[in-house]
Length: 206
Image (cartoon, rainbow, N blue to C red; front, side, top):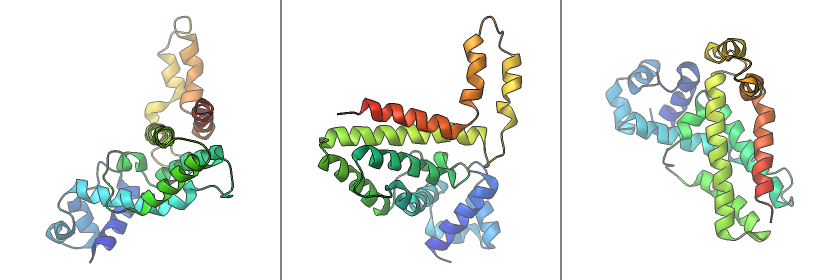
């Protein structure tokens, strides 16, 4: 039993039970070890989640680079966002897992450095590059968090976000726009994410 084995098992268990139910005690039962053994590697659930997020982001980092490294900055920035979203969607509650965590190594940071350097090479100041990438990061994180609330598992919608039931509560005369918004807000997240990302990139135009 080592730190990496515990982290891998935690990511697997996360996909099965979700972030709320993931505990060191439950993980110990899955690994057939005492909780004290896990506390030797991680002193708290928060420390474990930091390591899980670090591994997830590091392994997803290659997706955040464009297919052609000679591409213009917009392609680099878009690849960062779409790759990050795909990384988060690879795990149940992936966005909540990553939000607010402290990375335990610099593996993911090397990719972020590379993307930022590309933007600077194409005329961005360091500040503008940081603001753009952090805006994309925050947009992607919050967007995916909402997406995973509606679809806790791929293709498995939560009954709490049933569009028809939602519309029954909205008077068509008082809320005509919000009734139309339901299908936009709670369905086809792929399309809406890309539309939002395009708006961000248009605002970043030099």
